[in-house]
Image (cartoon, rainbow, N blue to C red; front, side, top):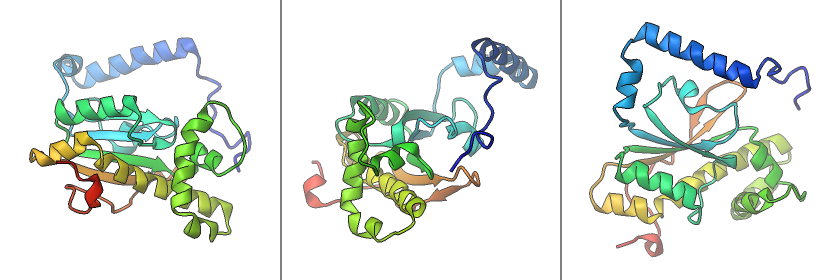
Length: 220
């Protein structure tokens, strides 16, 4: 468990410091490349859509050593992918059909607060309706999860299952199905990031067509 003196100190962050930080960012970027912002303003063509957790400790660009313009990002609590989320579907549609991304990566992280909260019987507010999606993932894998005695290990495994199920869910969307039907080069992947090591684990659930889907989910 984190104690107060172990948590990253953010006491120096203020509204004003964010604006000052922006000026420093601009100065550094222009020093490295005077045309940096001119190039960015001309448009974007990222090859990757990242669907990750809203957790402030899991920034897509930093942990993959990429730059602005290289990853299209959507984030929500616990990187959940459900077919009724119009926000996620709108991002997915734009990424696949306009930006023509080649990879969609669902990225969870160990120690995810949303996943841990979903394992309890507590009420947290309106977010309970969102966490229900993760409870359903637990239900699907209850036999394996219930057999894990260590609470942290059980939560970490649920994090992995949540990513795996989200990969499965996104392949069943009409957006991805139609892209594959039209011959578009598109692969879906699942990753889990470790806050303790900074390393990403590939869940090895990459899918680039609907061949492995149950027949009922294949759209024609």
